[in-house]
Length: 502
Image (cartoon, rainbow, N blue to C red):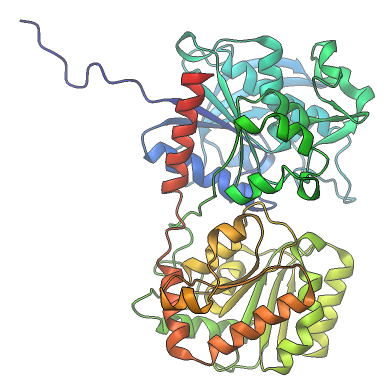
């Protein structure tokens, strides 16, 4: 009798290629980079055969270890020399492809903006090449040793992946058509270009019309991806519903309603190894829910670092955010005198709108003992802020998911959030019923107005002055599972459905 080889008959792990424009910690402008670093790693740990495709920005190209050239591509998208490289990035075991095209990607600083603060003039070619290369990998034409069954594209930068695959009608892994998942991290950013540049993409002429990438006389990469992706996800269930209405649909709500049967929301997670108060090397003292003494030390250290009065009894509200109207930081400025008058302090880390930067600097100058502001971004300071503050403010007018409030939950820093998008999905208001049932994890307000935010902050102050109830909410917040384990499993189920059903 022939022996049955151990493991024989088991299906091969599903092959998934993630495609994105940034990845923490080397290239980061926002939460997208954190997702792109953590989600593939979580899926790989769960048994999927996952790889990542990124542009070869200088920081990534220099850091790639074990680099091999998978395939020379030659001239493409205005670059005379393009090649596909493979290796691994520091701290990751996810095989990573880089598109080596120095003419397009070998530039310092922001991946989207030039030194003048304006978008790079050739962004269409830069991100057209990203989508096109992913399609070539999915078609089995670039890496003969590995072909994905699913390509997971992130945001407008990668939204042309399903467009190029639809144009080719290519077959992927195991003879099946490669399926595409497009995740919209923020619908407000759509990759908008003049329609007369369509020819630079090398797509069939019919795709220049309403059935393709054209939208209201423009070329919009995200719209094209929404039209052709096999599955569309957003980064929270509430946001997936909000964008079907004009108020949050950013003109694309009609397109999304047309594809609503393929749309779902999966709430992001956070990397709970990077964001872990029990092991975080960036903070003054480690702590956990069973022993919060280290959190008090973190607060004192943060107050000293920012030049604030060293007052353990003053509730410290932190903000780690882009300073933009979307994030509601003007609302917080409006109620700042009330918060400070009640004995509170504020710490702000971020950059963005020049008027908001100026206003927050002025607030710090007017009350240096109570308002600390750092314009810019510092990853270590972000950790120290989340660890050392008592509250974390996320008063966004809209928020697809938000990671900051989940960092706050992890560190027992109670979120104060507007009830929208992922904020509504991840924070439970400390009302009487939630406190009684031990479900409360923060403070939630229902309208993007100064009055509503002021009421939420008064609610937080009331809680602060009842230490036993406050500690109960802190411990419940820290008990939340904010990891990628559940979201990674939900994506895996979505991939399997897309492969099975098309």
